[in-house]
Length: 177
Image (tube, rainbow, N blue to C red):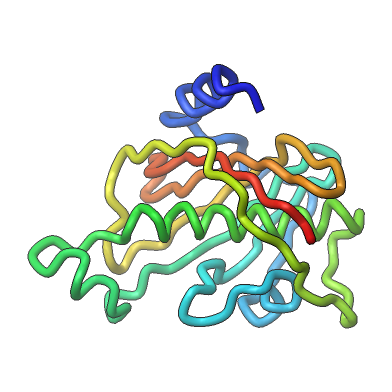
């Protein structure tokens, strides 16, 4: 992906949501346990709690993550000012993007009972911008949008939104094995 385009997208979406998540055509209530059926991450690094809406045609998905104040990461990052790590935030956004690719690849709004996590490798973080900290006890709205998918490489842009404000926007790429 062209680096100038990456910079333009990061700049454009660091202040406004990628899309109106309430306007997505398919409302979902996909739980954390169901998310485990389609992506390989597990506790303690499974960072998508729920998938709430989807638009297959446009390649859009929304989800949620609650930042539990009891999460041990907050005791070390940082003891006097607990903040969710930026790398975890990028991972959170990336995991929602992986969920999106399950639905787009299979052209479905449901998770099949036979679904299995896809084998993949992260290849690049093309860019990320952090506008505000994610604090303990916050409910995070996650948004992701497909940018490119050729059956092997997939690129997505996503956001973590807290209290109605964009906290982070990132663009990442994965390779499906």
